Length: 482
Image (cartoon, rainbow, N blue to C red; front, side, top):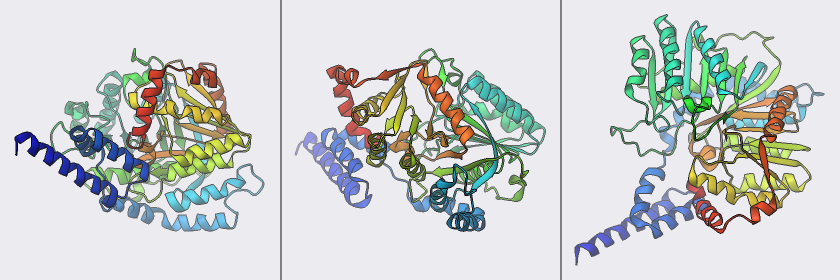
């Protein structure tokens, strides 16, 4: 037997082994299984390499300690709130948000997301304003600053931030900086030198044991959270880099949405950060009361839940909350997302809402930042348009906001994209806000963004070039594993 035949035999056996693994052992959903089988069949060598990079599954036993910690932290309060929902005592019976108690209950039972109603919320859509405010709050910190970001750049903004953190660490403030090893793969080790020398700490989430090589593309920490002294929190879409200030010539203006939260909702962010830190850091951090200060009861009056999801949890908590919001809609649904690669359940919810007379509007960026995801996104737009959904393509820079507003009564802002990676494979967190005033403010922002967008008509979509249709078809086949 020739060398070439031996190599072909080995490749064939590897493909058969991987096919058996995908079908019988890993128990993936059908669409993901077929996508991997297609790749292994048509491009066996490259497909094998892609599987090693993208197809690995992190076993839940490696992560279930997170769920256990979460339960121990909030179990007593959780049981109390469940009973309040059952007795319809959690929200005032005559309030506009009263009929969302079933959604609150779902987030309590599946996502361990406590409901708090003493919060204030500031909304930022401009990177300069967000980071100027954040750095001022860091400079005012007294006890600790906790950060987790998916992307951190060693550029002007990145160095400005780490310098502010190092200054606080030198004052004796506890500073912990968690970054994702893949999202921040270009970050040099020297970036944290000043922070370390000042007494601050950093940790990489799921790093590789092989220097400069990380095959763990899945199961990334996509959260963007900052917690200061346990009473100020930031959550949203902005990462750390000059492009998020609109300084990248390829993207131009960067349009994102981020929240500054004060009140008891910050404690849920804190609990999530501490669990993420314990997973990534070699030294375990005790979840003690110094990180969970008593809140001023009359801080604000906004009701919120902070919902986390990821491969460590049994349910796709954030996706389920999105679907619950969509099915609750009576008048309007306004969705902004940089990527739109929904599964069947979310597609069905949006189509049913539109076919039921709800005014459903989806806003997407008009320019791509990821080739396959961009064309996979466009492959779904025809089905949306035929159902009566209005599609807007944002043209003033790049739209990276992750927001959903329903009936101007409830809203969500967070780190979650509308795609399978965010719903199943990445660690995410969203704020679900039960407040008419805040939802109305987000609705006003959406309306303003419409003025900088082009509405996609069915005629435009049907007349798109044949090559675009080809790219859409290929990308859609791969969408379950993008």
